[in-house]
Image 1: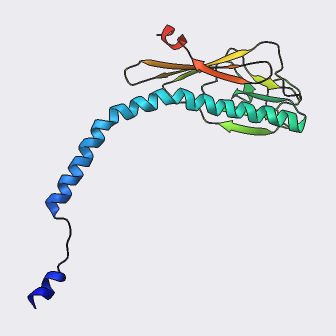
Image 2 (image 1 turned 60 degrees about the vertical axis):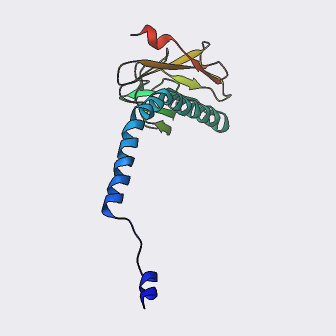
Image 3 (image 1 turned 90 degrees about the vertical axis):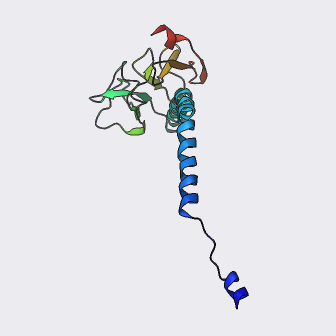
Length: 179
């Protein structure tokens, strides 16, 4: 009978073992937080610029496949504005090529604004693709994304758009110049 009782014993964790395990998890989490924030800070520019790059490619493709002019910009009162690249960005059919989202024009894509503490700039008020996929206008442009950590230290990345609508990313020192 004694042997039967030893096999029926339920094995589990004691309260002390559970508390020690949870304490270790909490301590390790607090130790990892600063480096996790650092990783997020360094990746924000790349993630945001890749999202913009994707929207540019989709807008260019839409212009080509639908034989339409497509504008991409930050809108205020349905009008493209040069200083709103940090806000949500919209691609829309721009039939009359005036960089204004008129009532009869269609919104194609919208991406959310960037992180509130970061900066994004571009030297033009809009990017407009012609039906052949080329950019309207003759000049190239460069997006500059500056991410700031909790101490105010910048990390920067820039993405240049050429006349054919192709994008290239690289590190930049322009964020350190702004401090």
